[in-house]
Image 1 (cartoon, rainbow, N blue to C red):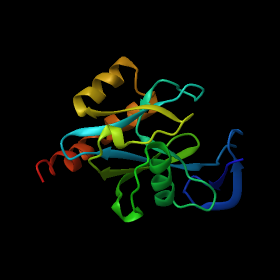
Image 2: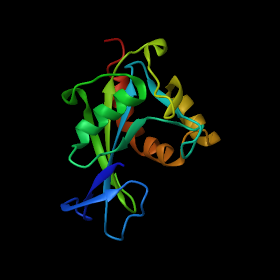
Image 3: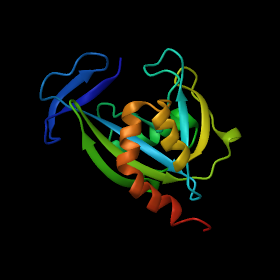
Image 4: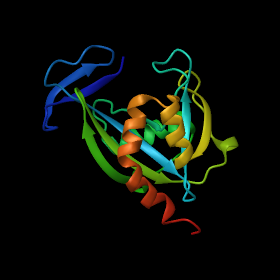
Length: 172
């Protein structure tokens, strides 16, 4: 049973916890941490959601819910490792921004890593494929519906900042 801390609309902790899978009450918010792994050559690491998951077969960046008692940085490091086998210290993640929807705050980070695909360790039941994709390919995948819709919206909004991180380091 996964528990998540409950926050108010200003992201103040309420002292309550939420059980994953149960509906959020009006005015309650959780936190999710997401990371765009980039290689410094204009590509982003995508994983495909495994069968049996919501949005199965769609591609996404790594991320997930922040568990009760966890910080956003702890969660993003844990989720990245669980979904890809990539280890990164909390200090390595670059904060991009935070947005909010009906019941969730999303903390967005990026991380520069050049990892060969054969070194990625997928989590059975969570992810079943991995690829490096250029920004152009990500945009085409969004248009084709092969990237989870919310991830596509987040990418479109964050792409100018991601491009600055990814391409200004090209050749270094």
